[in-house]
Length: 337
Image (cartoon, rainbow, N blue to C red):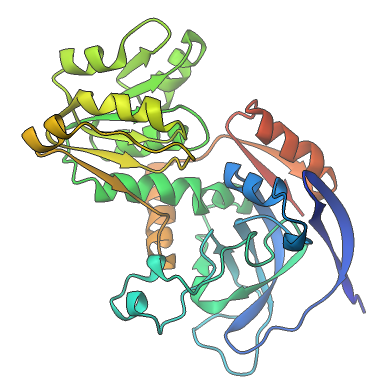
């Protein structure tokens, strides 16, 4: 009987190595998953490139899909052996903190962060909390579902929370791993979609994804273009550059909202006059609850929304990670086990 499983762990800054680990036993409130796919996300760099030696070893990965192969005797939910489930960035709320008591499960500060404070999905197996499990629809393959557990829910939920109505002008800033999904969701929610990116090479692709208008910032002033179009009700920023994102604020209509899902180290600098004078706002959106992720997956099935992915076997994890880090992936990378 097999007693170990393969995992790609970070043992030193920037290096992923394949190791054999003993198969763990789930405790009360946990399950053991045999993994089928795990997306590689830009947020994984915070784990792989960590310079604190006390942080290691750690297995990254938070776009995880697998099947339940072990349950404790007493389970909290209606999960079954063999059921295909997913786990996103937030690994399962505690049900006890003030945020959980208000039903704000995605804001629970006592839950594990998969691939960061808890070993993640660059592996053949993984322990997961039951409160973090997401049911995967049969219509989605494991590879298709994986990136929707992070990039999908991040953009889908942000658009839902933005308050935009069908027919509104909505701008998606950044046409990458997050942005290419945001364009699809925005189009299928009934918005007039403006894609904002650099270079003419992605203009045709943005149109194919669903954008009605593409603004090439190498050739056009994005704010002036948005103002000419009547200003955006929502600008969804998927990039991590705070200065460039802040500059787009002037392209918002009165009561417009700048939604932030791209998290960088640079602060946002928002001028007070247009903020107050136009009653505009800035809002962040952090992933979602397992229920909200399931809604994202259902919407993706209903509208045939999929991430564009490249796949690599677990054995090529270092190559796959470096491809993501280089920014050359089109647009998401998924490990298969």
